[in-house]
Image (cartoon, rainbow, N blue to C red; front, side):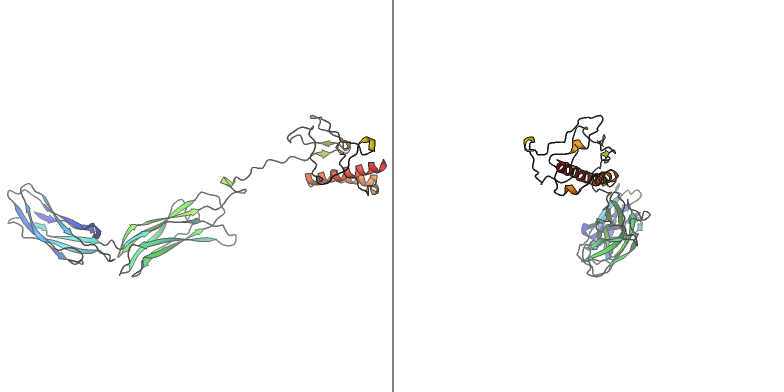
Amino acid sequence: MLSIDDVVADESAGTASFTVTLSGTIMSPVTVDYTTGNGSATAGADYLSASGTLTFNPGDTAKPVVMTVQSDSTSEPTETFLVNLSNASAGVVISDAQAVGSILNDDGAISIGDVSGLEGKANKRQPNYKSFQVTVTLAHASTLNVTKSYQTANGTATTANNDYLAASGTITFVAGDTSETVTVLVVGDNTVEPDETFSVLLANPQNGAISDGTGVGTILNDDTRKGGGPNGGGQILQPVSDPPHADPLGHFTPDRSAAGTASEPLVDHHQRTNKQRPTRDRDDHETETKATVVSQPRRGVRRLDDMVSDAAMVSATAANFSDGAVSGIAGTYDSLAAGQRERDDTLARLVDVVLARDEIAT
């Protein structure tokens, strides 16, 4: 019993190989003729016509029939031609006398690209969508309309998490067209997260074949935690300790949690570095140095008078300051709660007034 199988081949392959099979045992050679015939494919343009005779010797079970297919640059549907068997040796039955050869068009190869982009920020009033354009390409312009369907699929980005909106539909390449786009809407947010992906899948081509049917969309995270940097890691801020405070007697207690000891002088934040102040020795009756830093690292107590510097500015109007004014400024210093800089400025004013008053008194 003889039969021949069907074959599918790309037109660019150059050949289509059919197999004629003999079943059963033979004691002498068996022959069978074959010949080609047109289907939707045309001999000379899509394949080369052929005919011949196959001979099976005892022990043979299969013989090949190789046909030549023609490649072209025309985008066209799948085409077919026939191979027919006839005239088998006496007593041999042909159970399947016709094979169909299908020539797949490779000029209508369809592929889809990848895309990536920033997700964008969330909008308080309405959703903020970013359009991701995925390009679908036809290898060669076709004389026919080429269509295929597409559909999105979740990856690490999901529609359930509102990372993007699902999309599906049909793309059509009209005659002469080679590029189309699929639009997927990505939803902006303000969440710090890894980059995420989704896919666009092609299916059901008409008048073409899919060579690459999966496009990957990558949603790039553009959110950061406060401070910026990896994991939102900007500068790590250390806790700020309380500023030194004064008791009612004018004693100042430095912050024990700060670096250093009480033997280190307090920093004067009052800007005086650009002011040159006259000094004089004792013989010229200039102001004596009154600031003496008392090293008491454990007690951390210094007198207000010990903080007075011979560099303090003496104002010509200092005589207008009464004891009450001095006490008022000191009270302001003790009651300030705004912060270290304001307290230091008030302290500087108080020192200036005390010095001015002492200078006038002498």
